[in-house]
Length: 116
Image 1 (cartoon, rainbow, N blue to C red):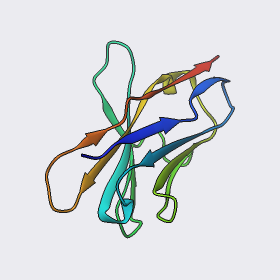
Image 2 (tube, rainbow, N blue to C red):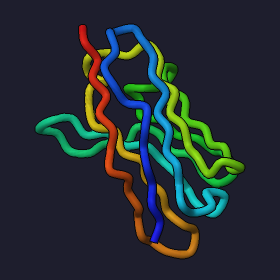
Image 3 (tube, helix red, strand yellow):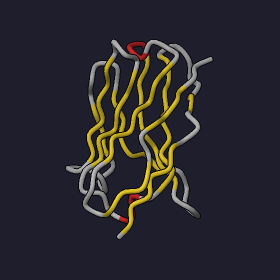
Image 4 (tube, rainbow, N blue to C red):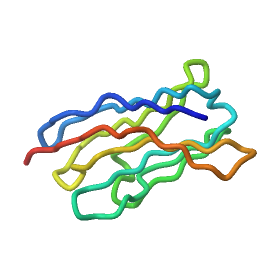
C-alpha cells in the first residue's frame, strides 16, 4: 500500500503562485507520478505527469504556467503553479503508479482557491 500526502494548497490572488508537494511512502523512483484536479461539478482531470526518468506531460490549460518535478531523494513530487487563474480553483490530487502493478494510488487532495 502506498500513501501519498499532499500539502501546499491555499488561497491566492489571480496572477500569484503556489507550490504543491506530494510526499510518498513508496520509493518514487519506482513510480510514475502525476497531479490531477477536480473542480465542483466537474470530473477529475489530468494536470501534469512525470515518469520515473523525468519525462513530463501537461494539460494544454496549464502549459507554460505549471511545472511538475520530482526529488527522488526525498520521495516527493512537486507542482509549481505560476500565473494562477480563477479557473485553476480546484482540489488537487497527487497520483502514483508503481511499475509492476496497475493500481493507481491517490492522496487525500489539497484545496487551491484563486480569487479574481
